[in-house]
Length: 245
Image (cartoon, rainbow, N blue to C red; front, side, top):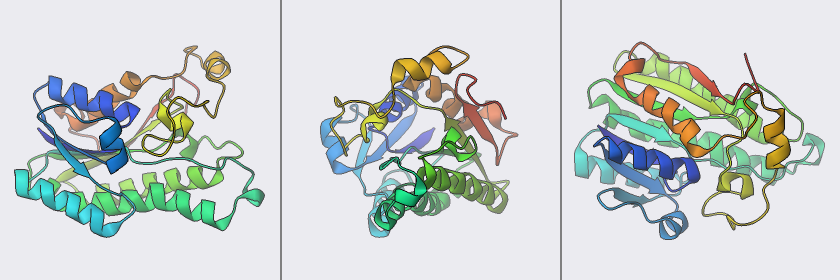
């Protein structure tokens, strides 16, 4: 397969890229230049700097993929971040706009730019990474939850509009112990304190631990592969049992 991974330098992204390469796929890693510098992709990958919230940057990134490969068999959107966990009445318009831009707008720009390449392939699959917070609403996560709920709605729309050529699905994880909990790869010091108490969080989960990147990679590979060939417009909730819709 020819697979592009937006956010491929993050914790889940690095594990996913490793798994894709291990099964013989060609991989394009798209991420912020700071992330590419901090976590250089493996040899043999196509490394492409991109600012996911900038339309021109996104279009340029997928133009590089088109020039290199001509088409895509899979696209995974891992881009996103969370800031300013506060009650909505304390959230500034700037924080709200930044969160929507960095998550929902990025998804719109990336998916619409990737789609012509996916439609040029055979049996292609698009996978957006949302969050359990899109439906399992908790206080203080308002802008992020709204953005991720929007991502799911956007993915379902894409599933309708591009069937049967391209399948479009979502993986919605609970908390994963990566740099995301510290502000995001390329946007923060990955060694700083997490935004949640990892031990306390794990104790509340039926499976008694917080997720690690490989827990999310398996469901992504499933949605990219032939085992999910009759699935589109669906969300896989991957959270150790914390949320059971």
